Amino acid sequence: MLAESIRDELVKVFTVPQAEVLARCVVTAHDALATRSDVHDLRVAMTALAEQQKLTSASLRDLEEQQKLTSASLRDLAEQQKLTSASVRDLADTVRIIHIRTDKTAGWALEWVVGNRLPAYVGRQIKRCRVVGPMDLIESLEDRPAIHELSDEDLDQLRRADLIATGTIDGDAIYLVGEVSFTADNDDVLRAARRAAVLRKVGERAQPFVACDAIAPISAELARREGVWVIVEGRLLTPAA
Figure (cartoon, helix red, strand yellow):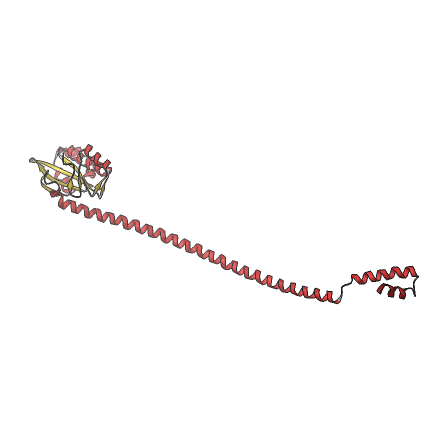
């Protein structure tokens, strides 16, 4: 055995006990030493580890590039979102403007229709009905002493009336003062009543009315209480003055 062989060599120089101790130390040290195979395996493992490290570093670089691309994509998406939001706001503003213009145009068209057909709408109650301009009405009142009873606000009320017409009931002259709206509401009813009241201040007989395509029941009830005629789709609903 290795220990005995080493001891036999050592006894040539040392005593037997010393040789045995030294032989055991040499064998122990020998067993603890790495073999060539161990060194080879260690080198192979280190090489593989280095390759894995390279691959890991490359993967990290790729991940960093992907992160950069992702961040850039997110920034682009954010910019696109801003542009989309701005476009939606612009579209909404455009739709609102078109809606307002359409309502105004439709309102003017309805005023024109009502103005042309008003004599037919109220023909059973008002004779010799004729639409007149607000300024023509105001000029016709200027020579009357009672005109001084009207304030600037009163005159503005007459100027802003949608329709004013003259006519007679049982031979007595009367003015029709009206508001025109697709859907008549309380404001339309009250404006018509307020503007007709201006003419009564100067001693004129005046009948307020609203002309519309539809009116809510609550507004129709208000019109009844205020004595305002309601014309819906050309039909006079409340003819009592």
